[in-house]
Length: 421
Image 1: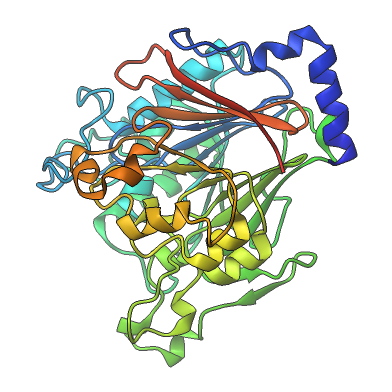
Image 2 (image 1 turned 90 degrees about the vertical axis):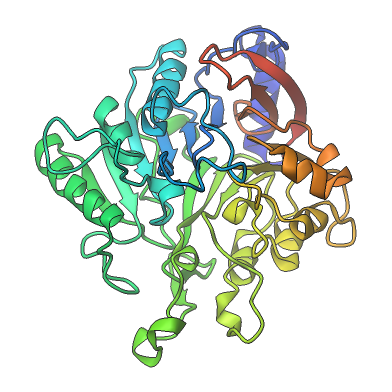
């Protein structure tokens, strides 16, 4: 065990005030975040990804703010999960309300120091629809991240395309046109800083409030964006994708391949988020379409992994799982495609890596349960917000599932503590 992690573990054991990380019971309201804890909230809206972090010093980060078109035929079909907690509000507003409540409970002023969009898909950033409210100011509508920003101040937004949004081709669809109008207005009128993710760097997302006590034990490392991958040495990178001048339009990297991935480290605890990175190559496609394998080599073992691409059939390949060896998986579900049967089989495989692993899903459709069967019966939780709470110093962590049918933050299940590795 790292010396810093051992120090903090002793603090937790000796100081009764810090034992509140474990003083959590089913049926109670979630115990608020306290200084030194790391909280990771996987928020279920039924309409896409949203992961909210309260870092050890109170710095806040939101990764993604998905909002599928609520009027689309597929969104309303049995193939998709229903809106959570209801369709009375749009996902961006639900996300902002969740964050506001969690921060208020924790005696923090509701504000996002950072927001990051892993890539430009509606289930990660929000899609304009016929019922999207128009912004009170600015020539854009409120959906996903643009709606979150209407309720919460955001200091910095990190995406994969700023400022030209031209890789691997110009981004001019209605979703991106709306987002770019938001970027222009938000930066000029609200002072929000927009940046492109900088692969290899560990100084783009940092602790903002009181970093000194955690300087040697906390880091968020940018692993990859647009195929530019950290080598694992210093801040140097290499490019996985061929020069686009050598590719025709059908061969260009997909949006998912361009996803931002990060590794968060707190003492002995590690967490990996990879957006929708793919790792299973279609027959006849070039080997560089597998992004997970080279990424996994520089990430290394982690404790918790939010599944790439929601666990869709092109993700979580053998190499990624063997390298990351997660103790805990979180599946952000909004479709009956999540997760693929073969993906779940790989996740539980003792041949890929030995040992226990616990799997949690934000929402699991009955159709999935009927088709996949026994493997889904192993889930520790198949519906609700999933909170990972890491103890001061990162030596141990818990997983807490919350009732998502209302905004009361009632605990459904408590798992752990797990020992960070």
